[in-house]
Length: 546
Image 1 (cartoon, rainbow, N blue to C red):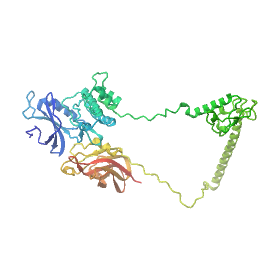
Image 2 (cartoon, rainbow, N blue to C red):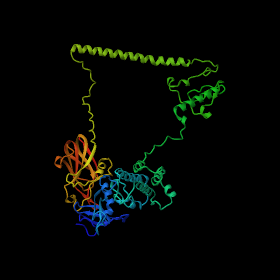
Image 3 (cartoon, rainbow, N blue to C red):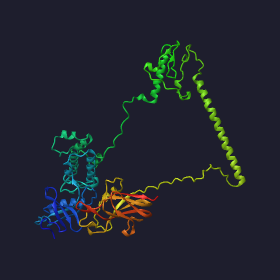
Image 4 (tube, one colour):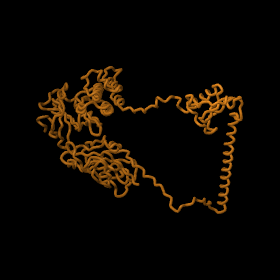
């Protein structure tokens, strides 16, 4: 039996109309938020009047969309032609074709942009997630259509969803252009076409302004090739680090400092009657016996003190005769080659002698120990260091961290409808602001009296010893922590090791350590939420046994 007002089955009870009517070449599509009486959940139901053959193409597109599973597109639960007659006949009066979609909670993009434009990072994230969902539809041959600010919904956890999937008509080129217009709207806060192109582009980063132009271009050579390409270009680029201080000159390195030092020495030698300055910054004596002004008096910084002859570079030694005496002779200073040989002898001979002593000691020690072993028949005991009488402290290695390698929704009592499986990774991504959530149930926090619970089964990759599990999520929701050794068992195959009520951080410790590979966080009670009851699991962290 169908409703006399909308032509819908009695299973769906319309609550209120959502958004404007969509006029198509074959009729009009109106959208309602409705109640599924059997599953006790809200749905979005769209009704095409007239029904029958006029809506057949739209129903075919909806059935194609039913095979998609992406959080960016509302799932298609049901699609049917109401009142269709024989081929070529008009639909019966009051008949309608309808598509039942997942109801997406959240505020629309139009409501968000009424407050002002988005920051660049937020706009990139929203459009990238939406583009990835549209690209998934294109890969199965479905052009989505209907990409407007009123149909795009900002979901919880930073996700985004398109409420009306699919539109009555659509093209791949039209989807690309619509995404470009949405990106422009997000960045400027102005609907495309309401302001001149110049000021609009001026309010966007150059790369995103170019992306908008390419998305809206009708030139095959200048436009985007696909929505996949647009999603890739919307990925936030890594920020480059700050470059080195541009005020620092290239010769501020050690080699530059040494070069300037050599130049100053050459200047000293080039002065009439000059000498190589002593390492001490005190005034030096010139060739006439007078007092030469220090380097600072001539605008030059003092020369650093010499540490050791072996530490100086060879080119800092006297390079020519006359550098050490007023008569131009070498004086008592040896030539550079002789000085290097002396340093080699002074340093090398003691090192060689030390190496010989060490080698002899090692050979003698091994020989004595070998003879002792032959006589006593057992290895000689090596004397140990004196003990203070107190036992040496033993370092205990910290327990290895338990990590989650994957997870999936565990819903053995469900009716086949999904419980947000794409959100499961958000419950162990290390970010407490993102979460996996159940669908919203009506009438009772006990899952609308439809089932005992639902949960997420986490895989640790291998058996790991655990002392507990830390869980954060919806305040007031109740959970059990269960463990088991198989990924596909019934609820009884996972034994309960802890239970509690969720909050910002709930540490569910076990009575005794448990070694397991699979951990089931089983939600047994929901918390009040908008429109009913639901539960979120924001972060799950296994605690290793120490």
